[in-house]
Length: 97
Image (cartoon, rainbow, N blue to C red; front, side, top):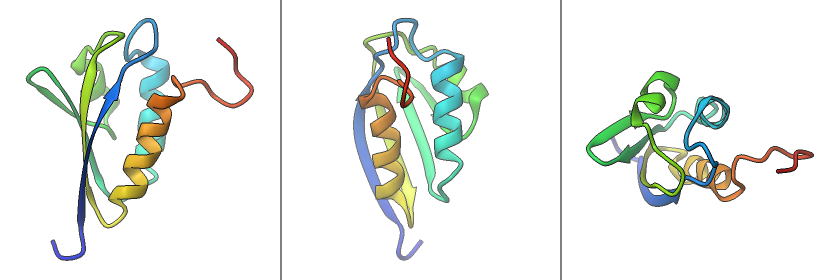
C-alpha cells in the first residue's frame, strides 16, 4: 500500500527461559497499540506478534536471534517499541532481575 513503510531488524532473546508467557504478554500488549503488521521469525517459523499463540509456537530459547519485520504507516515506531522490549530484557520500570 502507498505510504506504508517496511522495517526489518534483528533482535536477541535475553530472558533466561526464552520467550515465555511474561515477555510474550508484553510483546502482544505493545504490538497491539500499533496499526502496522508485526512479525517475528525464528528458524522456519513466523509469528504474528499480536498473537500470543503464534509467539508461543516460535519456541525461541534464550540467545536466539529473531528477525523482526514490520510493515505499515507506523512501522518505524512499532519496530522501535518492539526492539526496546528486547533491548531492556523485558524488565518493566521499577522491576529488577
